[in-house]
Each structure stands twice: as C-alpha cells, then as structure tokens.
Amino acid sequence: MKSLRITLYLIILIFFISSTSHSQEPFLIKSESLEIIPNKHLWFLEGFDENVSFETLESVNWSEKRSNPQSMVDGYWVRFSVKNNLQMDTIGLSHNFNREKKIFVKNSLGTTEYDYWKLGLH
Image (cartoon, rainbow, N blue to C red; front, side, top):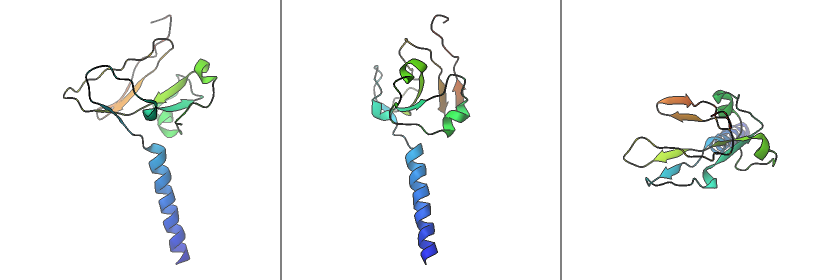
C-alpha cells in the first residue's frame, strides 16, 4: 500500500512538473490592428547565442523573467505562443529594430527558421 501511494505521488509530481514547465498560455489574436503581446505570454532564455539549434531551444528550461541584466547587451531568446482567432490564416510579427534577430516559427505546417538579421548588414 505504501509503495502504491509513493508511486501515485511520483506520477502526480511528474505530471505537474511536465505540465507547468511546458505549458504556456497563448496570446489570442482578436483584432487585425497592431497588438503588443503582454509580458505574461513571454518566456525568456539567456546564455544562448544565434547559433543555438531549435532542438536545443525546445529542450531547455525557459524562465518567466530575465535574470541577468547583462542579457540586454549579450542578447536573449523570447518564446511565446499565439492563437489566431481571425478569419485570415496569415499574421505578421513586428519587432524592435535595435538588435539582431533570429526567428523560429513552429506551427501545424512544421518549423521554419528565418535568416539571422544583423544590424548594419541587412
């Protein structure tokens, strides 16, 4: 009986850890006008540069906040999920123009890697 209870606790713990570490509330697109994604929908990853693979990005732990102020200089990754509630199936992403960017998009069609954009070159 005791081993059954311990096993049950472990299953609940594993379920809780996996659901909280990989779940993310999607940002709902409800308007065709420009919308800013609130911070509650953003997850951050520090310590990885533009050469990191998508597989690595998917496998590491992300944080709800940036922890290192130096990341503003060194760079950081931002992850968010979007749910499109519009009739159109194409949406755009506008982002600040002040730093280099690399964008991965994962959806039902697969994963797309967009070219690395570097200030002064593009």
